Length: 259
Image (cartoon, rainbow, N blue to C red; front, side, top):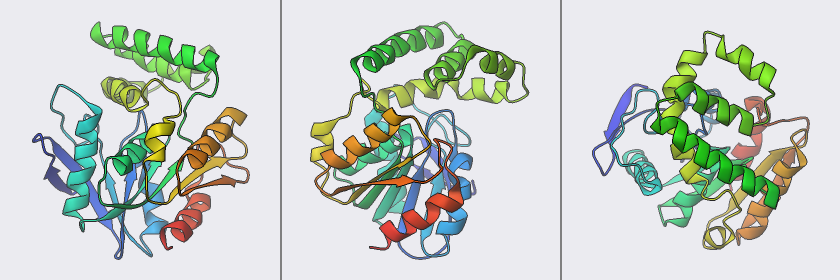
């Protein structure tokens, strides 16, 4: 990240931009930095100005406690103001929940696209989210960052053998460094249910995308977002999972953001 701005509360945000044209801000999800969505910036920057940033408490960005979801919406407001005054937003996973909240808050947003924002679609999954929230808060309060990361990986569906192997890998230290930001993504997701009332207040076009090789509940959640937004649309990408290929996703986003 080669540029910095200050958010409303003074937090330093690191970002970079590429390309020319209408601005698109890419919003990463949990356990990730701007580098995670950077591969998507390259194909999009052929037609747009694409902004990639580290969300607060990640990468080269700072943080200012206490945390509130509103601070992350203010972060996006500062980025949009610094990069043209108006932008489209793309958010992946829980980053999609943040992008949708920003659009609902009245920021100068033209369009919003989200990929597999993981809202719970059953009472069982909602109960599981509540248990995760409680256990995550306890792990972070007690300084058990590794356990916090493990809780998140379990939430994503990884089995214990894969998680045990990951704990022995060189990447684990970096994951533990990001662990406190898991509480931020958990807050952005609310209670985990589809925020239909909030979505109904979004007046700009919303494109909700899922991979057809992802679990059925993720496709259901993506469809529920589209159905709840007044100008919502739903799209599936053939052969894609939650780890969507940038070269498959980019043309779909470019077509949507060109409208």
